Image (cartoon, rainbow, N blue to C red; front, side, top):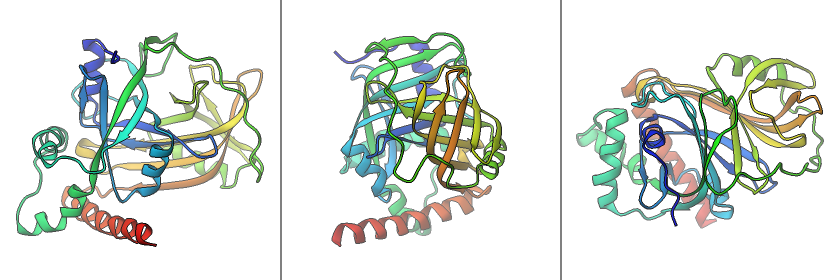
Length: 310
């Protein structure tokens, strides 16, 4: 039977402008990035949906290779929900690579306009944004578990809807290149601290990504010290770290993502060693942002087609 969720949780899923998507890497780590699901869900079918671009072939390949994903509804700014809960949805993703045109026009379009405002129309904009809209595909997540904490800091024990919570994941083997930071940890911590939302992701005991909000407590040559209300799994493991901020309609969005190594000692102290970094900053003007989106979509589609043909 599909997992069902109550009205108060549906208010969060249907009302948040952003969510944090986490998926599994081939090495058993977790990548975490921001998405805008624009309230797409089907309670009767037990699915929640986000969209992504065909230009992000690496992300799609990883999701199709291991469909276990998580969506963390962790922030209420510029959306429609005023609920206090942190909601973590875990399920198996199904990428719809050839979406029905009626779905895009009748479902996705109105949902996006509710959050993003009226779409730009006209001869220039229809041509410029063609790839941006045409290359966006829905990803339906068939929900297996929802964990709900009573506040956005994840204090206390969560309410579990669906599959029971798994046990702690096993400790992972050290990476071949070692566990130490490969990008300057102090500089990374400074940039992350400037953003209002920081989230940590790792692979849980049943293979689904787990996500929690964290705070940057300090940094040194050995890594970034993290604090969280949740008890993190002990030992070492690959993990992802996201910092982001955004305004209404995602104008001026800033995102900073890391992959790296998380080490949690017996006292619960969490030290994160960043290994890779990526980020972007969206223009603060909506027209400029749409021009950039159109350009990035065209470039991404060209790269995806070149990779497919090679």
